[in-house]
Length: 156
Image (tube, rainbow, N blue to C red):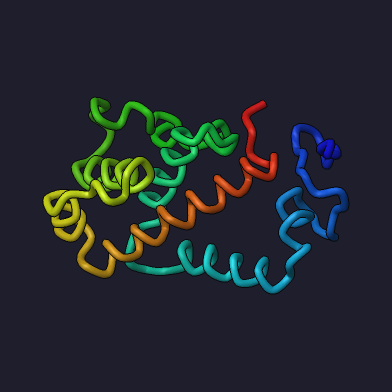
């Protein structure tokens, strides 16, 4: 099956587009119940008050870089744009480093998260923050891997 062109770089393996404003919408809207549920979960991650959104954005951007998702090259703040250098860049705080190391580990090998890593995140964010960050990293990865599989997140 040939991937039809959606818009610009966006392609998918689906033969038909569903209605929607974005390429992602035109794919997920084939299953409106799923699309709505996924959007609610994504919104909940960003609307919660436990983990600061700037930290979530650092982790989201790092996941995007590691997956080679095109959102890794979107315009961003200077700090977010420098996230690949988090281990050595002095602009990143101890909280940033702990959480970025955790986000990377969850992406690369979730079962490899150590007790020490988990405890460090709990120390920085509390138990509720640990759960939010864990779920957020999973949602970021899920969305980006789906985008890449469907041809929506490839780097130009």
